[in-house]
Length: 436
Ligand code: F0G
Image 1 (spheres, rainbow, N blue to C red):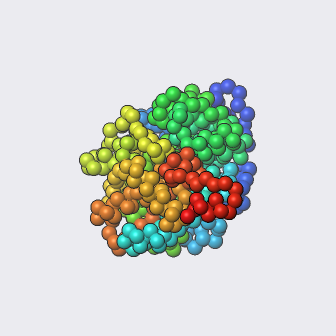
Image 2: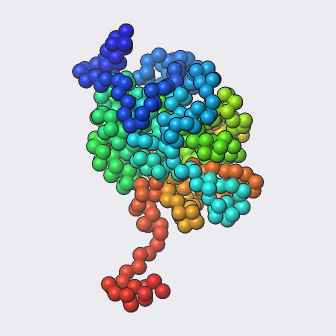
Image 3: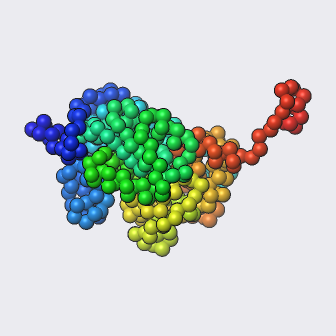
């Protein structure tokens, strides 16, 4: 029976010859053999999907989601999880796959940013620093789960479209898992650190003459033709890994739920993942309230924030998205409707920030707190500043800003925005002269 399943997977993924990669050889994290029995459902019409290779509902074209089996974890207690090390696989009973490939992702710091909270007049401000993940962004949480799934399904080639971080992460996890990797990037718009990573880990890097939305359309077609297994966040397994970001925040705050979580929004899966995680724990009675999920977009790429402003649960795609925060330079967010649900259901908020506000916030965080994040990540800090000034955020709130990627991802932007370098002759007198 099991063999028949694997044979079907093989035929499904390629139709030609594909080497079966044997499932069930966990690497990286020991003891993560537990996983959640789950269903794949259409987010829009609720149909159950049985083909694990689909990335859209065959009936209505809607985006897919995983229905976690909460009965299976009903007897579990937070303290049971807390015996395991703090990383993605601490939460294995809530994840729809066994760990096959890990680089020890997750377990990132939650910084208590007192200088920032004092300056902004907000009771508590924390930064969840996702730049500390193995490839420097939160994408690793989704990729350990997504690539583990690819291996479970017997896939040999994985691929994605990306503004940079997804490709860097997928390239690394594919390397660790022994898979081929193809990444499609928007030409000329990928930050240097991310491009270097995708090349370095051995992915086939294809620059597409278009933006992220164009690249995503192409890679979806390649997945439909079974050329590769798609690991963009429309793959419902990816956001499942990203749920652990929210699990960790609550865990690190000793189950005292923050009032608000601020998240940069691009293709919009991450805010959905955070919502889904917290909804699961709320349903189990592990937490007593939902934080207000607050999605921040760059002014030049803001379909979700604009829909929120209009009170709509759907968004209008933008044809020519533009922002210095290239990671979130996305006009047609695949999970946009999921993001809006997350925001409305939690009585959250969404707004835009300008490129100038993003760069100011990036420096503020670096210089007040010593935390280095890339521009897209600084959007959450810029959103905090803006919404505090506008009075949307109260002074007595406990706020967590998710800072999604490391400052070293985009060194060019930092070097441009941080002003002059001093030059001196190689002697003490001249160095004293220039630093005066
Ligand atoms: N922050 C960073 C650093 C990102 O790389 C991304 C997305 C986001 C925020 C937004 O997350 O798409 O789930 O709303 N980067 C994708 C990529 C699109 O290809 O790396 P989202």
